[in-house]
Length: 151
Image (cartoon, rainbow, N blue to C red; front, side):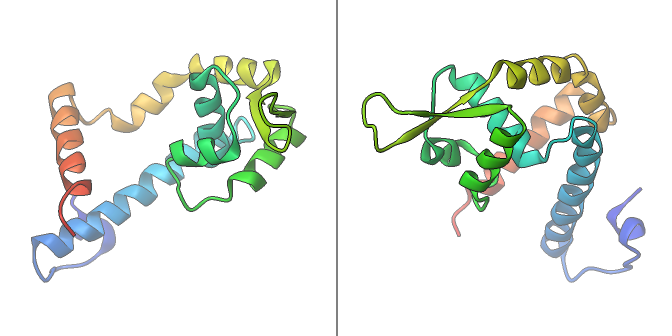
């Protein structure tokens, strides 16, 4: 189905306006479907992102380092980390190099949750089942080009 039919709009000013609206609409569609998946595990997309960052780093990170790697740069990293601490998915540890700083590490419970989620990654892939590998590669290239265009 086309964006015109999905949002019930007959005409766009030009293809660039249509693209901008399509990107926003598609972002919201992906986020809503991702939310359904993450709700099963009691996580928000930002919490999931932080857990994946910590697992991938393989070492303790400061909240600043986590924030730099997050997809959502506007998020309040400290607040999200505190919620993960309450769920016992991450822990705060005093930095051995500078006792004024706090490092964040993923707990065994956090590791186990991600391992469980990894077993169901194909559900995420189903969101994009209408795209073959070549189309996904092309779309990735176009989105990279869009983000790196001159403003």
